[in-house]
Amino acid sequence: MSDDDNIGKGTLVVYLERGVLMIAGLVVSALLARGLSTDHYGIYKLVGSVLVFSSYAASFGLEMTVTRFIPDYMTKGRPKAANKLLGGAILIRGFAIAVLVIGAVGFREQLGRTFNAQELFGPLLVLLLIHAGFKLLNSIGRAFLTAYSRRHVVGYVRIASNLVLAGLIGYLYLTGGGIYFAIAVLATKSVLEFVLFLATGIRHVVENARAARSNAKLSLSRLGSYSGYNWLFRGGAVFREYSVDHFVISYFLGPTQVAFYGVAIAIPKMMLSISPGRMLHGVLLPTFVKRYEESGSFAEVKRGYVLLQKINIVLLLPAILSLLIFVPELIELVYSEKYVGAAGTARILIGFGFFRVIGYPFRLVSHAVEKANLIFYSALAGIYNLGADVLLVPLFGVNGAALATGSAGLLTFMYYMVIYRLLYDVRFPLLGNAVLRVLLSTIPMLIIFSFTKVVGLFTLAGLSTAVLGGFTYSFISLYNGVFSNQEKKILLRRLDIPYLKRMWLRPADVPE
Image (tube, rainbow, N blue to C red; front, side, top):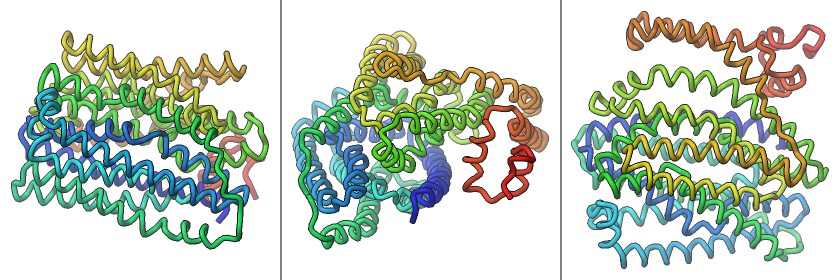
């Protein structure tokens, strides 16, 4: 299968995967928020934060190293080196998991008291460790398949496991199961993913082992440098994510406020998860690496960045504006009326989320041109976020955490823009013209949505006008001039839709 075919298939499955994960995530969050007490829902949200921190402690940058260098080795005809890298990554990860288990068991009482979550680090600890251990192994499996341009297989695995998760949580809700059942379901999901990754990835390992004799020597200094920078980056990223917010909120305010913040971040997290710059990272990285290695030119990568940013702006800027309007209605529908108070916090996170969205493509560029050191330095914004959390949460509650995390995303975007210009004289465009055109294109949609807000979103008239507003923006965006004709051709290359080609391209440019 060609690179273009893999990109097309991978992109399709990634979007399908994101759709399933979003729906499953909403179902799981809604059922747990309604079925568990606020304290237990807060503990459930803390599980994700514990996993983020344990992932960093056990990471050592292995995932990105596997994804970055296995395509390099396979391009150069070195399959045994690919196997050697994978084996080393699994060995290091296994040792790190063992250390984490020993540490968690040894300090369980102190951890429980510090974060006001004695139940999580007490009776629930065994289930938590099973979930975390297999999740850490699964991340190596995802990286390995992605390196072989099989990101679509990763998508299939995650779709299957999340459907199982949603089904079991539905059973919990119907039968009145509690927090123990909920954590057991998470552990089951992780074990299932491990089995599926093992079954789908073993073929490549066997093929590499049977390959003709090849150079299996690894450049440990090169791998170590790349892994180290990515590991350090993950350290800062951990403190920039919502997970550290949960811990700080739990420390100062308790699990109940963690539950409210967990509801507030649900919509912005979904928005960020469907960002093309984030979704397509695994799909595009192997191809970007190959093209950069073959040409040694930054120009190809920069063109991809510009196109990716335009897609970000066209798809997500109107989505952000729409979500800012309808946040209270969505929270009440999904999580119940008792969590509507989280709407203000959600709006802060959604507004700042735009800068996080347009910051993601810089990571793809940096990995492709092997500038992992730049990714590491961007993680210093995470230290800022932690400090701002500690300062603002006692003053402003959960809104303080939202302000800290949101502004950290803005700082990260500004850092990338400045550092590439100073160090490499690469001027990434701000694409202000594209932003202005999209904002003008959203005006009719926002006018229509104002009527929707008055009559109520979840009425026949409200839903009808909401759909009309969405179609209005979609139609106008075809003619707002954000994409050049060459970029339109690239986007349409994988879509066999003659009507769209006639509508979007000038007559002289429509392919025969």
